Length: 447
Image 1 (cartoon, rainbow, N blue to C red):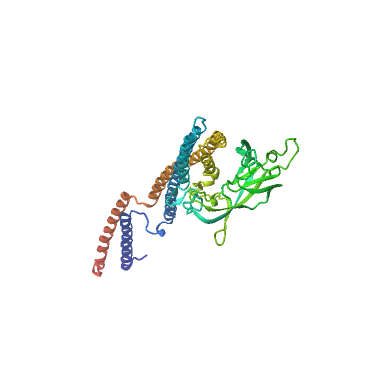
Image 2: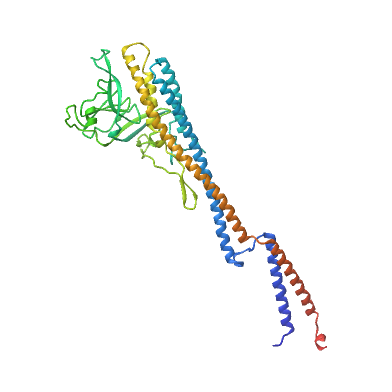
């Protein structure tokens, strides 16, 4: 094969250009610190780089989610811890109030502190995180407790009860003719609704039992006849006949029992500051709104994704911790003491005798409420521990993936410098050899 001068020049220029490309490649690697500048240079490195970068970004977002979830849970935990302390103090006061040596005035001082504890407890129910109420589920812009009077606001509320929720209480009832002043302590059987001062009740009966609407001051309010239920609108209580509670009369003859489960629908309006908002606790309808707004018992779950296929529920609902029973129990003991005056009458003395029993029963109720808060606090504490472990693992994962990403993308500077120097030598040699080739003329070939 004949090698022409033109072929030699073309090959020489092509080699020089190729050497320049290689020099530019390594110069770019040194200046950018990356192995490739575009996917076509090495598709495998490019694909792996995209995957590693996506993983690093996901880990960073998971870590942010976990930290935000930890802050939310820590706020909830502190609120519950404060509430537990408040109830423990309330229990201590009830222990004092249950003592017979305490006078009416001394018990009134206890009630004064109980009122403050109740106010603070309601304040804990309205704790917010970054402007969002933490116990309100998805309705984070709505407080659990009304922060101002809601005059003219009406809710139709539906509560579901079971017959084992009937509670035995003691009341001072008049035994003689009205106005005789003759009273005795008598047992009563009730179910307490979520609110007092009820406007109306929708149901005409509970199973086969007839409902009578009345107030606590009416005759026989706490002594309903067999087959009937007294609905006390002012106190929000359903009073049952003992025969219907046990399902038989004194002779052992069967009578219509209380249904195993039943619903009560009633109206409540003119909420005051400090009242619990029913939309967080019951199936209800805000009939004041236009059009009316229907709410169902919330089961809202605020879920954070904290890792690959790992989620955590961060919110606690008000209905699970700050129940209407808790608040009404505190209100009941407060109202019971306030209803007694130190006038020395037999009736007032009789009612004072009931206070010891009320305070004693309140100890059991407060313990039950407190245990519920403590259990929820323990659950939240375990979630916080889990999140702390997750955050630590995510930090380790971020370091590992960042190192893998660096190994895949970043250039080895030492190797790049050596390659650049090697190609510089080749490039200079090609220039020198090409210059010698270009200097030849026809005379040189004739010789």
